[in-house]
Amino acid sequence: MLNTEAVERLASKIETDTIGTVTDRTYEGLRAMILAREIEPGMVIEERRLAEMLRVSRTPMRAAMGRLLGEELLTRLSNGALVVKTYTLKEYLELMRVRKILEMEAAALAASAISETELAHLRTLVTDLIGVEDAQRYWVVDDIFHETIASNADNGHLRKLIADNRNQVRMCSVGKVPSRSKATCEEHLAILDALSSRDPAASRQAMGDHLENVQRAFLRTLHGDAEDSDSDLIRKAG
Image (cartoon, rainbow, N blue to C red; front, side, top):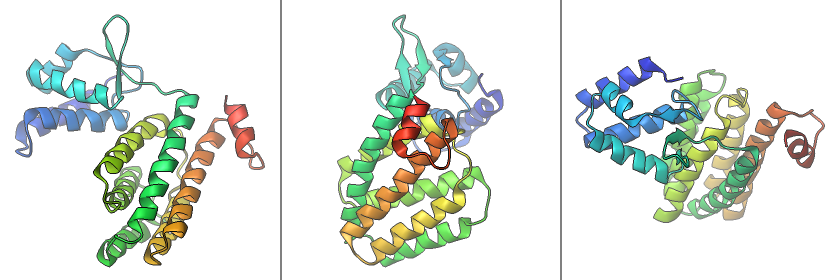
């Protein structure tokens, strides 16, 4: 189901914002709605109707759709229809394997480059989030945290791969993982401690431990007991 209130908010934002082009604002808004599941997985995108609701021409709408297709947030069916991509468990596990490779490498590279100012800023954001149950704020801080580390890897291609991968992983897991804000904050602080020590190996390990825990929590919500191993969780979830 399409969240009409969210569509109207986006339409107003596209009309009133002056940052970027209409195409950019349309793309960014639709992308945010998809990631927030205000446009749900499996939903058919009616380009003409959505363009009318957003009060934009079909040219920026078509360009935005093309970018979302390229990021695999949308997929095209054999009949030509565009739908919001639905990810399988197998795809989630594949994406998480790639995510670990990319973000562990980024953390190792960032250890020697990230500034003390950035580390202090991230530590404040994470510490202030402890004990706060605010999903929207959680995702904002999570994005800032991981994007800051990726940007300090000083590799534009790696940074883009991480951003695209994180979007795809979020398509799989938003709404399925119970709040683990406190655990995530503790893991983020451990990553910051490793980065502060300027230790690439420790930074890589701390990031890997964090992402393993993210995957384990997701699998346990599908089907699992506290004593289950990762292989048990994958077998049961499948």
